[in-house]
Image 1 (tube, helix red, strand yellow):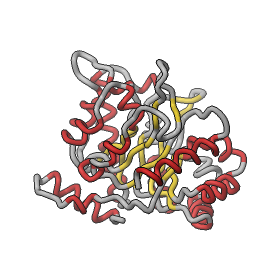
Image 2: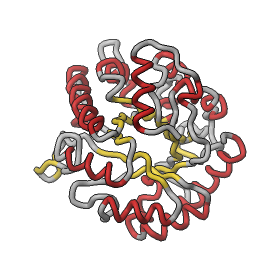
Image 3: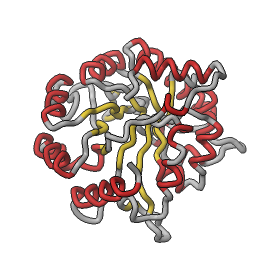
Length: 294
């Protein structure tokens, strides 16, 4: 597993246009991760019991989903949650955060990129987080291309603060970033306007595919820029709904063959909605992954 310092050094080599051996970006196949948004209801009720059950299923890496300035990680301090993870054999290399431009009930949301980011970064470092990810832009936080430039500026500033703590900032896509405006894609604007060393990308393979984009083309255009992936499948119905990994239409074997080019370090299974118990769905997903991808 590559350390934070080594990762940033590798990124610097890329920015200098130097050749980097593929092994420099080889991800550790030991870790099979899960985005805890998939388990949001179970985690809200019983985080300790949920993590214990996920460990029995076979996951050993998670990505946090609910940090806020007041509630920390699932209502626990960073140190307490880190201890709970360790007790169950987990690492948490990554966690999700909001931009925080939109207000909730007339007040800013704390622990976001725009509000109390210093505290969020300090808490992430205390929990052992290596990647802080801007998870989602609310409708009011998107706007036109000029507003996306503003978002890019804020990401650069947040990424600089993360760098001081030895943490890498990332941006997680959905499909709305691929809706063209004046012939340009907001996602490409974010890629090209943010500093490629300060802001990496967490590619959600489902949303990229649903938007009609090719993950491999993006890897080729921006090598080493995608250290995190969401491994999420799309069913074969006209609705193109979420489904268990291996149960849909996305060719994960083909995509994983380009992991080094992408710069992959960690991946996380995610299924926003499940037909029954999320525990059943994530069990099916990890079974496919162990047999076919790692």
